[in-house]
Image (cartoon, rainbow, N blue to C red; front, side, top):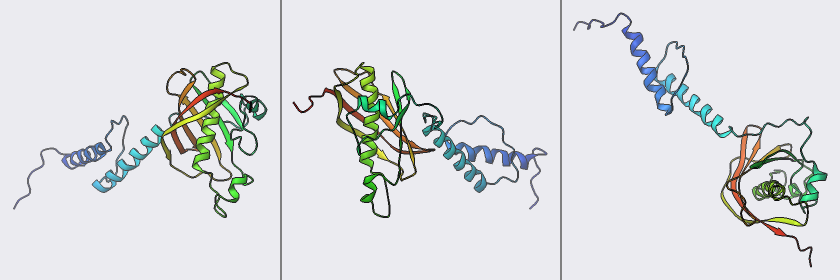
Length: 221
């Protein structure tokens, strides 16, 4: 059986090019770029497509990640934070505020092995509890809520509910938690609805929708 003649002088190259376009289209999103391909094959093309997709998804997740420069002067330090929040040692979970606007706030919590909770959670395997991650977010969001209401003292924010909470990675001693809280809707009748995310480096540690209420402190009376 004789070989069929080529329709084009570069038909093998065209075939490989079409293979590459078909394989790379499996990532499911448009690509704007230039590719220089050497010895392509379906297996290599698919693996490259998987790598591209992972990078795109990572960038998408970290699109809103705050930039943190530890050398910058914070907007609020611990001394200013305790003027608003009632929390004290060992339950104050915000070290400083580095960003604040009418719609969002970013706080920082530095974890050290000296935290009392690490003695029991867990011995020889210290992990910062997820419930305290949500508490740290709530405290950060509480600062924004009180600031937006022009409240300086005598009021607190209390949890009403948590929705869509996800714990994606462990937080351990030595980590710096970057806690971002964003208003989902305007504050009405003292009800605060926020989206919270905790970052450690390029990792999302946890996230969730938190709802709280601003309540006047009765000071035990």
